[in-house]
Image 1 (cartoon, rainbow, N blue to C red):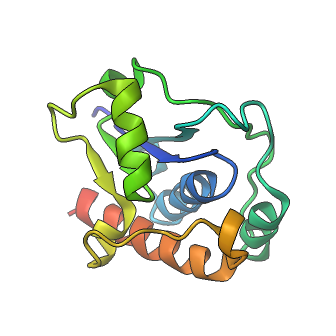
Image 2: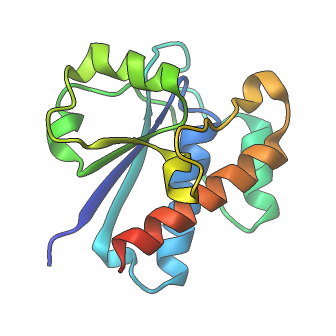
Amino acid sequence: MSQTRILFVCHGNICRSPMAEFVMKDLVARAGVADRFEIASAATSTEEIGNPVYPPARQKLAEHGISCAGKTARQVRRSDYDAYDHIVVMDRANVRNLSYIIGADTQNKVSMLLDYADRPGQEVADPWYTGNFEATWRDVVAGCSGLLALLTK
């Protein structure tokens, strides 16, 4: 059976997208389907490349027993469009910036995370600016849970 490949994308790849990456990895492991998925995350910008997950995001994951050890930010590459089945972004700015890198979404692979939480079009607020990592956590868990439910139907 081939794996379902998911790439989570945000601006810097140090808060929202790594939170989604590691929450999703935790969810698929708990569901006993980790072998069916390849899950990663990346940034649309170059600002944080090589940097670890932002400490408050790392702490929020750790509060829930989830490690993101070893993760460093990387930028989306054009080749990621072909390499992944689903490219899940956090906000509309990510959609726009992603299009500059990958071009047109001709295969309808790009979606917003909260579309899977029955909140289509809503954005996951960037905790880098809001400081509210708990709200981001709730959004990420809701979106990832909905995505997993859809993909394991």
